[in-house]
Length: 286
Image (tube, rainbow, N blue to C red; front, side, top):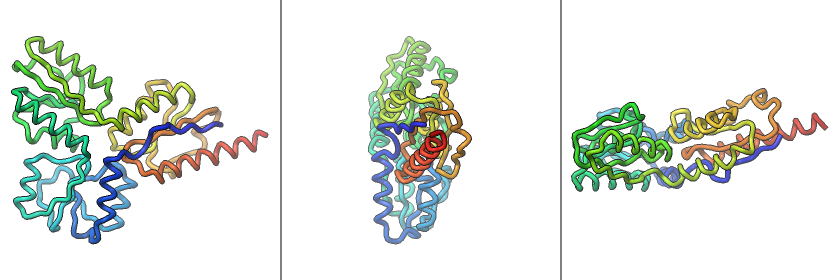
């Protein structure tokens, strides 16, 4: 059994930079994480062990600690000002590409567009984007596209949106709103695109796929969905403990990829497990 690892997988620079900031905090108990830093239980368990308090993503309660860390998903300017008005020191680890999406949405609004956000309505990143907008629209599927009374429609995407999904939704918006000028600003993050492209190169070579990352991670779920759509037997695991040898019976080539919030050591542990399984099967068949 051969093991092939995607040439691009795992943690993106935005998450890596956020974790570097957290590593430098001397007194974690004085800093509340404003929601989940990333949707990955391995990372969250690591932060819990260090003693960082966490406020639920949907909460409106002001944290009791003197400092509040804004996660990689970002928050709205309205929420930022609410926390500052409460006297909190903000430690901002918003991903630069999420900041780019915020700036694009605000520019479209200044240009007179009614802003449409492509993404999951309840996702923390999308909530941060829409809270600063007047009468925004969130679209997660073609069924949610409608004819809207607007001359200008400005479209941005949640950064982990699949490129083909964004293209399909923009086309549907244009078809349903022929009276409107539709301006689309591509805010899909480059690391997400790179991991999808690397997986696409891997899929023709494999007959099984292991995707590593949090089950609540949008981009990780998308990687798993790609494998399923290609007809590849796919397993999505959060860590090496979830792997079962029986899943790989009869496999000749197994692919490995991971979402953008997955720790390098978690991927390495899964990779090592697969290599040991493959080596053992090679010896037993010799």
